[in-house]
Amino acid sequence: MQLLRGGQALPYVVTEEHEDGSLLLAPAPVPSAHEAVPTEDARATAVAVQDGGGILEVRQLTVAYGAKMAVDAVSFEIRRGEIFGLLGPNGAGKTSTLSAIEGLLKPQSGTVLVDGIDSRRHPNQARARMGVQLQATSFQSELTIREIVRLYAGLYGIELSGQQIADGLRVIGLEGEAHKPFKQLSGGQQQRLALYIAVVHDPALLLLDEPTAGLDPQSRRQLWGRIEHIRQEGGSILLTTHSMEEAQAVCDRVAIIDNGTLLTTETPRDLIEKHKDDPRVREVARGEVTLEDVFIGLTGREIRD
Image (cartoon, rainbow, N blue to C red; front, side, top):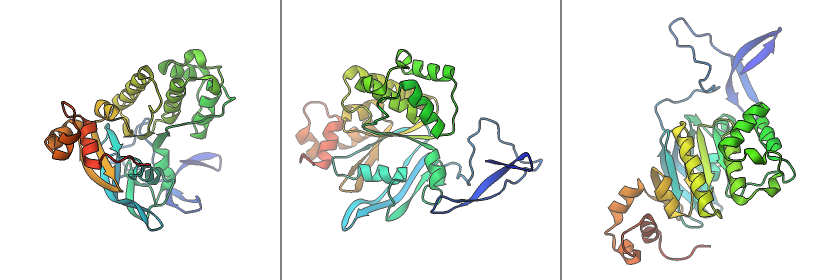
């Protein structure tokens, strides 16, 4: 970051971040002649970033609500450029895991690294590297689409021109809806807008919580295409879904969590191959074994509330 001192903009870095949100700044070191100078399009960071690791590293994450253990020492890693599915029945621990990653709740123990940044030590920097789309995203109903995009871009410190907004809406098929209030959009249009807002600041990691819930097949496939496009542009995605068809279609790897414990992490194909002869899976399969058969075989047939 830069501070204006004596009429001159000087570079500073954040050396400490306190619980009350205040920051301790120090002048940025001047690179020597032997040190590479970052390019203009490199991601700016105010804290040390660990190179070589995954875009998201979750280590021994534990979340409890009183005596109830919601997440029990869960560990997994999402690779850069990967679409990773977190699957589990209702009450399995998915939402608590996501909330801890997003910084919405404080875990009892464990570490979450987002793009190499410890989210507990540097929550603001970690959150700045994430984009989030919830299952039901509700924007201000009376605002127009253009106004919503401008507002949320501004919250991230990004100023978009009218042409940039028009170009972005064209990409998601909403160029003709720019002056329409949010409340007049269909469910599919609202989800496409929410996804666009979630990546307006070019996050390193995108968290999608049931992004296609309630959408018709056409809208769902269109959103799948947008997710794949984000990955092709260098994005990494953590996806939660109850649709095993969706997970099998779009995810590079999936993890299954149940009763707060991570059961397995594999590619969908390897997961099916590994468990296709499991008696629990064969019992529920009808014909060729699918990811849904494996999921039910491992987590049980009981309906969860």
